[in-house]
Structures are given as structure tokens and as C-alpha cells.
Length: 417
Image 1: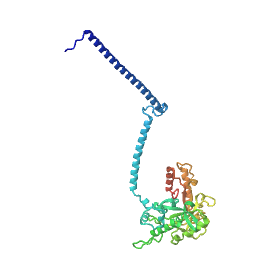
Image 2 (image 1 turned 180 degrees about the vertical axis):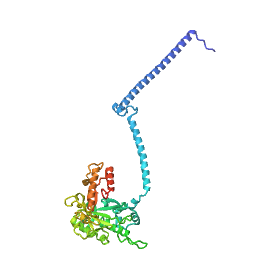
Image 3 (image 1 turned 60 degrees about the vertical axis):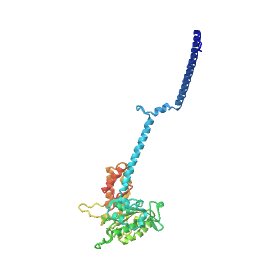
Image 4 (image 1 turned 90 degrees about the vertical axis):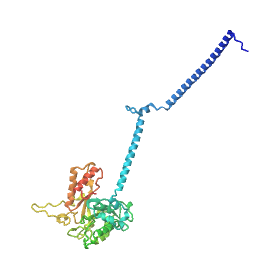
């Protein structure tokens, strides 16, 4: 049974109600969308305000920002600083690698001198080993002075290995023995003049003067410590730190072994006989005791260079016109040399502080007049048959030191310290 058709009026009413419902639904959706948009805008505005506050709170101070920026560079100074730090670290690592590699290479190149003369102090009481003996046989002596030689890792032997023709030791008299050291606090029971110098020198000389295994050739005991120059004497400068008379007497006593073997340079009353070892006393050495015996002396004085031109040590006599000057030498001095207070019969060195005599006024260079002044002192010493020697030569600056050393090579300074 079919449905009854609606009248036109009913159809219009239904259509109006449906339209109204759709209108209501559309309005509700639009309202929801509007609300959501409004809420979203409020949230964004709130987030923006919070973000802005956070940015302002954590922002870099404008003055600091200016300090961290580089004008004209367009990049922050902090970033540049970080880059420079990183680059510096990289360069430092590269240099460190190069230095380590180079040092390893140098370590592989074994230095013969260091290998032979780097032993501890106790080796002085041991026999001369073949390695050190072989090294010393190939050393050429040079005019250098080993000042405070006992500070070397291997005293005496290191000086001989360097070719020094002069060695210095400070001695102190305690408990009836002579101890070697720079001051009282550095003295030890094992470091005596005998153990560090006299006994080792005796061993070296016995080796150098041993009879040849082929042909039984004898050296007659006159060969010195340098095989390449057997006639070169070695000066042992003994600086007496304690009472002069007592210390000198003990030194004279301890030299008896070298004296018995005729290895000491000596004055025999008429001339000076040079031998492998020459003993020179300095410091508190009593000149009157050294010069007391006119017939025999084997301890010579270290004369004061600054006193050579004083009234107590007059200038050299001038030969009369037409009379030739008598040739004299330190080995065979005549009246012209022996008239001096300090002469070859009683003295060997004429020493002084370098700055006191040299007149150095600048730390950068030594001038020609100053060199002439040093030369004058050298000539005063040589005119008396003495060897000029300066202590306290500047070590720095190197240019000044090298300039002075060059003068020493020209025989202005004597043996270089």
C-alpha cells in the first residue's frame, strides 16, 4: 500500500525545517572554528611574549656584544678567538711533533764525548778505562781554563777531553786533608784533592809514559797528558780557601808523589824546568812561603794582574842607547826579569777580574780602546814572563762574549775561562 503523497504545503514546511537545521549546524561549525582560531592566536601571542622575554633575559649585553665584534670584519671576535686558539693548538702540536722527531734523531746520533765523560764522580777513583784513554790520546790541547772544574759531571777528565790546558780546584783544609768544593756546605768525604786530581793525574801520566810494547822505547817520563802535544804542560790551579800557611803546607806535602816522579814544573835556582804538571797556588796562597826557597820551587804563585804596574813591581828597565837588549825567556830568565817581584821563578799566572781590568762599560760590545787596555795588561804580564788570565768573563750577551773570545784567540786574554 503506497504512501500518501504530501501536499505542496507540507513539502515546503519540511524543506524550511531542513534548511534551518543546516543553517544551525553551519553556524555552530563556524563558531567552533572562530573559537579555535582565537585560542590559537592567543597561544601564539602568549608564546611570542614568553619567547621574547626569554630572549631578552638571555641576550648578550650590548656593550659586551660590541666588545665581541670586530669592526669591519663582519664576524664576532669570540669566534675569531676560538679559531685562533684552535689554530694555535694545531701549530703547537705540529711543532711538538717536529721537536720530538728531531730530538729522537739527535739521540740516535751518539756523541762520543758525552758517552765517554758522562760517568758519575766515583769513576775518578777507578782505573782509566780503555775508552777514555783512547779518547784522550786524540785530543788537541787548546788555551782554555776549566773554572770550578769540580762542578763537571766527570771532573778533570772532561776538561782533558775538551783539550783544556788549565784546570782549577778550590781546596779547604779540614781534618788534616784537602777537600775540594765551592763552599763548605758542598764538601764531601770522598771529594779530596788526592781522589779528584792528584791520583787521576798520576794514573794518566803513567799510561802516557809507559814503555812501548814494540822496541821497549821509553818516554823518560816527560810526556804530558796530551798525546798530540806531549810537551804541553797542564796547569793545576789550586785556590786555597782556608788559612794560607797551613793549607799551603798540606798542599806541598800532598804533592810529594808527583814530585818524586819528577812530573812537576820547578825552578831549580837558575832556570825553570817545565814538566807535564804545573802547580799554581791562588786565593789565600802565601807569596812569602812560595818565594822563600831560592833553589827549588814547584808551586808557583798566581800574581795579581792589577798590581804589576805598582811601585812594588817597577816597570822594565830601558836599555842604554846603543846597547842591545838581552833576550830573556820565562824558561831562562835573566836580571831583567828576575828584578820584578812577580817573575818566572816564583809566579806563573797574572790574574784579575775581567771587568776590573778590562774597563768594560757596555754590555753590548767591547770597544777598540778597551781592547787596547786589555792588550796593555797582557803585555805587562808577558814582559815579566807571566801568563795573563782573566776570570769573570761575561757569558751574556753572546755577541759581547764572542767578541771577547775572539780577542782571546789573538792572545789578548790568555787561556779562556
